[in-house]
Image 1 (cartoon, rainbow, N blue to C red):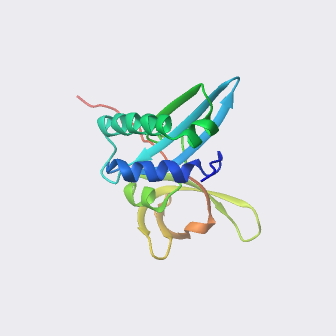
Image 2 (image 1 turned 90 degrees about the vertical axis):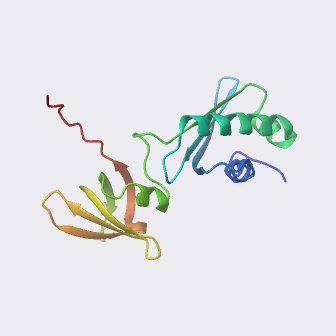
Length: 165
């Protein structure tokens, strides 16, 4: 197979499957700066990705890159590989990320019928996977149902609580 930066995600997903680790690929970003290629791989797990699993996959992936000359050619000689969880600044992309975050506060940007954008914040109450429907209890306490395809961006909103003695 001829690899390009666009289809390298498929290759990374295959490597993850081959590794046998209980993780899934959220996103893969290939970018270049000066003469260095960066491969940022974002993984997660339904139970929560551990540092040891992520480190193990990082080593597995680096070894696979070195063994696959086609992939090495696309990524170039000076490669920086970073494998991590998406973190709080990255958007929710996959349906299973929504399932994992039920009960948490999220912020959504939603497409309106008129082509505009509506911002909605609230607690993710439910995600119905077969229907791709998100149920949110908004800040006014009302429950809203949003179709997955209408969501332009979704982020988990981390709430800071005061520690009480």
